[in-house]
Length: 246
Image (cartoon, rainbow, N blue to C red; front, side):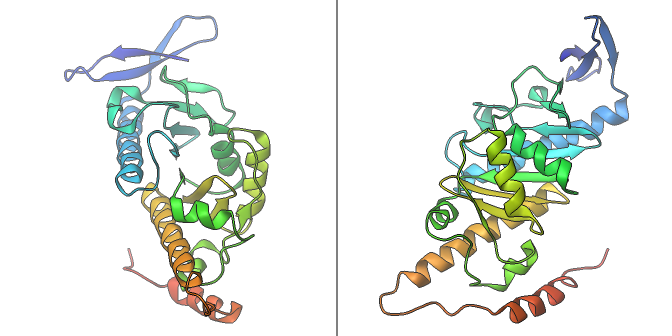
């Protein structure tokens, strides 16, 4: 656990670790504090965007980002518009809370399982309506668009399990094998990436593809045209070179 400690002219609280004997630990180095602070600000901004874009309602869904061996994560049951820089919540990869006093999201086991099994640096989990609807209908999202290649291939649906359980984490990992996003049956979506921006972009693309399939498949007497595996592979090769070179 941590205590809060004011040690800057702006009065912003910074975490001070508490050792196992209950004594007061030393504040994290300024560079580490600054890095964590910037990551937390971006996390909060991303979480608020999920609400603004209609991907979650209320406090459903959650967002996390990995900074070194610390995972910053949205707290459980707190509206995103109320989060401040002083509400930072962080855990180790073993699930032990190392920053903040608010309790982490109930979906922490799923986030940590993905971080431990993949190279993910950020995760966005939503209850996006079109994606959730698709999760009720099919075992994987049909290949309606080439952006599926950006997620590693056809987007699978993880079998249902109660939220916050090890079973849901295991189901999610299986559905994510070789993928960067999946649907969660009767639940929502999860996507990961090298950054919060990338994880969010994959989330938004997945919701859009689900909406397209639902619209196309709702036309009576017509069946949506789907891409072939070869066409998807070709798109994947083109997407690999898409965008500006850094």
